[in-house]
Length: 98
Image 1 (cartoon, rainbow, N blue to C red):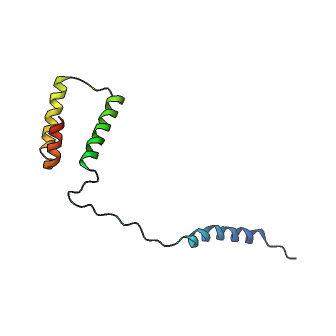
Image 2: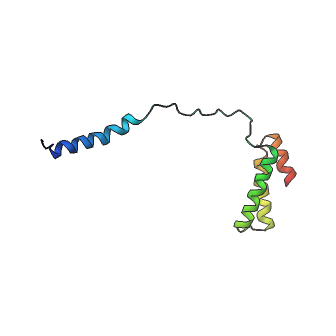
Image 3: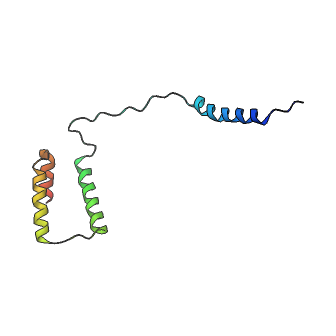
């Protein structure tokens, strides 16, 4: 029986390691990217309010909340300027919760 040269065995293994992954893959279509609808929201108003409450509780529990009237007044002014640019429904919700 003839002995196969080690160089040939090495080349066959290297070729197999290189080619097998390339031939094993199948062509597939990428997932469709949904187009957002203008004005649509993924949360209901109630879910959005619940999420806001949960975030507020998390912040109060895990961060040092500063209770200072001057800082609060300054931040309220910034919030009021931001609220002016929100859609009417969200603006109404923000003011009702203040």
